[in-house]
Length: 266
Image (cartoon, rainbow, N blue to C red; front, side):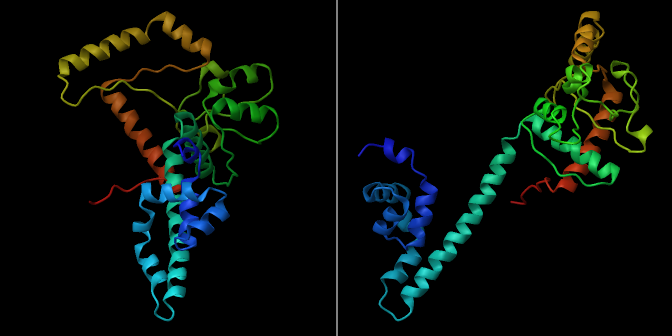
């Protein structure tokens, strides 16, 4: 037997069946459709007998009631293991979220909490997919960076109601802000340039000056405008103040969503 057949096998499912049948390879093979030889190979490779040693010991016991206790423990083990898998896969899914998916969820939740109403969240891979769904009438509202709607809005397929900034944007016909509509929400996507903690202040100033000069370039500003993206360059105390406020906003929404992870005390 080569390794290729077992590579495509759902090993987790086989292990759960193996535990359910208290180590019975023949019954595990029949239930999974996987050859007994492959089950045995995985059992040896991953030490399934060691994982189920207490259960298998009860199964082999001749004492009255031990066999039933062993089978009950096997079922309890399977249920607990399934829950661990669910949690592990949920955590894995969160770590695979793209920046666009994460920001979209944060923006929508921010609006929901600030406006005081409830929405049914529909996940999308990114802002563009959500904007297309909105234009097609598949969802009622979408919250994302305005550049995602630029072409659709120009074609009058969607309508932007407000922007989550503290001032109106000339890029979008001076649309009102959320605050002007009675919703206290200022949140947005931003990018920063960071340096190692021990970087000398002279170098930090030199880098900031170069960035400031680049952001003032007419070509850079024109490219941003053509893309429908606003451009504001903040540095020093002004930049730190903005980051602190955004951090507080994001943290509040993350906590309300139950996504905050407390660091282990170990």
